[in-house]
Image (cartoon, rainbow, N blue to C red; front, top):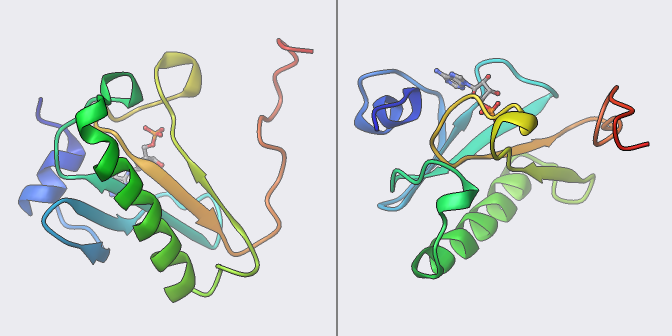
Length: 119
Ligand code: AMP
C-alpha cells in the first residue's frame, strides 16, 4: 500500500532524515509533540503492529537498537524518552505503515491524556 511513509522511503516526499540503512529509516516528525520527535520506520511496508510476524522480530529488535542510538546522538539517552507505537483506530494511528515515535527533550505529560473511559 502506498502511504506518506512509503513515498518518504522512495524519496518522492522530502524528510529530514536522522538515520538510514537498508532496513530502517528515521526522520523528524513534521508536527513535533516535544523538542525531540523522530519517527523510526521499517522500509518493509508492514501496515501496523498487528501484521508483525515472527519473521520480523529481528527487524523490530533492530528498531529498538536504532532508537537507543538516535536518543544518544540527540542527547536524550540519559534525560529519558518514550518509544511509542500507535496501532489501530483507538490509538489514533493515522499512517498505515508501522512506525515508532521517539519522543523526548522535555518532561513528558501523562501517557494517556484526557479520556476517563478506563477509569
Ligand atoms: P500516527 O498518528 O501514530 O499514525 O503518527 C503519524 C505521524 O506522522 C504524525 O505524528 C504526523 O505528524 C507524522 N507525519 C505525517 N506526515 C509526515 C511527513 N510528511 N513527514 C514527517 N512526519 C509526518
